[in-house]
Image (tube, rainbow, N blue to C red; front, top):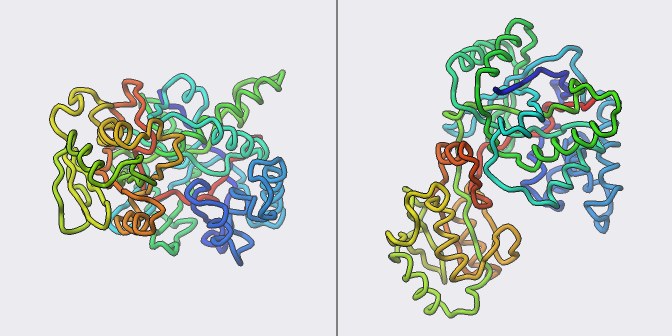
Length: 413
């Protein structure tokens, strides 16, 4: 059963919340982070991407970077940019983006649940990215960015959360991308106990976004457990920062692909190979797939619809029948030679939030030669796969809106 607990959140003062809040560390590169934080000394990027405060030539995985992150967190605390709540609380975090609204409960989840499979995963992690987050969390002595989890909607939990949102929020602001962010404090002991108990009846939580942060939190706990002769299991390092949303409020966008070259083939040769596994139809405009098993392809200034032939994938295989698998197994691997999309430098993944114009831009720039648009994986597919301990291909899901970092931090002691 799912264990959650309240915590003494570290968060910005009300007047600084919109200035502190920042996009997650992993949706930008260093140069982009520098630009986002320029002229803003209280941007949370000084903590989540501390290399922006160091010279360009510094290795972003050097001790100096992790130490600077810890130093910057201390400065934010010392100057009162961030303040810790006096009592253990839950928080309610609502985001609105266009017609999308998602309202989640901010909690600490348990490493034990992650390790025993109560928290289900759907992606593998990369060793280098996981190690980076281990060092970052350990240096900060904090979970500075939340993991994004989901669960099958429970009406009692939804009602309890909705009741809290009728009160005055701690923060309510809109970021430059048009997403609104509202946070409420839940410090009523009876309501905290009720929600904790209700979640104890939820059999499974699912990682939506944040596999590396989850894995890193688990490893940090094990490191600290080993170093603590008096380990009891109740220490804060046994728990990590999470926002949990009901599945009926989750929005998954496609995770599109662009490839640098045609694997030594001419356009005509490439098209002939594609036609062996797909029905190929020229279309007059950029194609955003409207159903499963439909793909768009942009090549040489033209768009095509691709529909896989019936015998090209195992329809009864929950992994093999995913659109990302169909594209990988029938085109990216056998035709373009992308055997391992997790490590191949010839492929680049483009979040659906960037739109089809970004695919056209990247191909038209001649940095890439072909682009593919996909229909998004559904939350039902994600949970069904996770329930049977299956792993999706890399970059199968792009969740929006992204959680803002800096609105709540969990200290590990």
